[in-house]
Image (cartoon, rainbow, N blue to C red; front, top):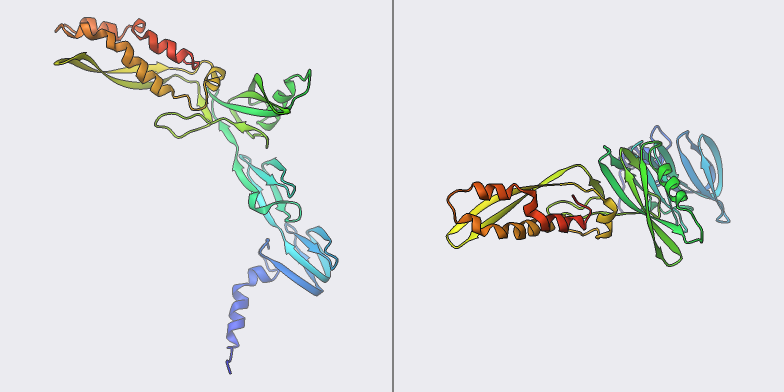
Length: 305
């Protein structure tokens, strides 16, 4: 006959004290019991859901001393968001709610989906030169003014810290997608139905945050033919002047590739200047903005100057 050591249950009890007894620790969704006749103390800072013998659930928020009779009890896990975070809460019926931090929330499996309730970071715009493009879904109603969308965007950002530019609406079924341009500085929380546009840049990680500050990219070009070639690096300074035009060009609009190709084409006309040993004329042509007419024309279509 197999004999169990008396010390084994004692060791197991000590190792699981935090989850099996009230103790000092807060209990979470791992604590689940069926109680025929007994009681539980739900401490201040804890919450639990109790199912009676008929399967009816009720939520108990501590501090509470609860008597149980043929009932099942499960403690609820807490989700906490700080001031620069928000809780994306998925309800059991599939709808989503965003709760801005600082906040604490008990996830009830009867009412919520624990697997899809997460804490996310607010979209942080640190300076006035940083912007977001947000597509906001609104009911398509005749005569509706877009001011409601602007108010919603301001409410979801930090108070008095964001400016919102309204764009044209795009119809989609019975809904209208309105473009909002959120300007920093701000901590922005999107609404559950919002679509935050991410832009793809060559050599960069796709990001929803655009910088309208002047930026620089270097283009290496080779001017000339045969043995008479000159390799130069052209530094191009550009700035996003029209965010709406950039969005209409598509989130995958490759500005860097466009600049590289246009500069190559613009400098190809300077072949005749490489035949002379005097590089003064070539240098003057390379520094003349008028040389880069195609680059200016192609980038203007993206709202770039």
